[in-house]
Length: 179
Image 1: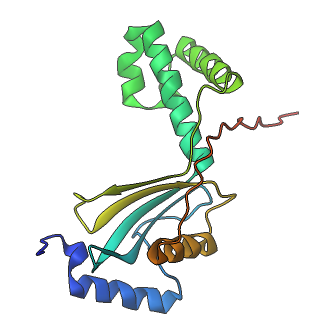
Image 2: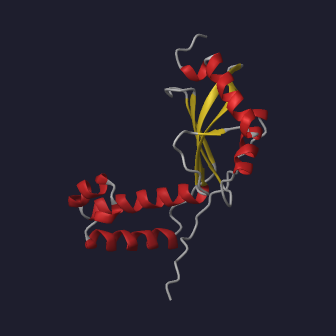
Image 3: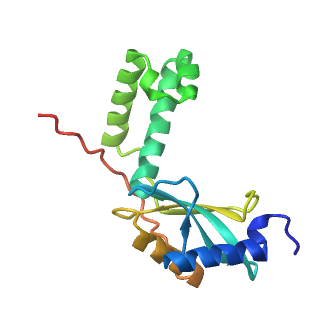
């Protein structure tokens, strides 16, 4: 199969392989990406249909995936309560929410958490129509995303030994102590 996607090109794969050997890791962080403990965006070499390919991976902590899903559910409740909030919510800038919307969202989140209506599980989603290589979105139940954790993920993914936890999890948001 011939691909116009450069993530399948031998030269791109070799360049990434060289960059990985310089770092000693099985991956390379994406350009202009600042690593943190909740989310990582990186490239690695794997295979698809027996051919080498670059995977463009976004790896999230399961707790972050939960928080995103929780926020989305609270936004849906807010829109059902007051459709006039649609433009503000779609803008996505929580710092500019009117006070009434902020209060509603806070209450909705508390209710959703207490009722454990939102649950998440480990996830691995492929995007085969990605512009460079294959897109991969992954949520794992880890304490932190570290280079060691990323190397372990890539190794297990490439060996075919990665096993996702199918347990459904609900997390409780930690409150900041401001005393």
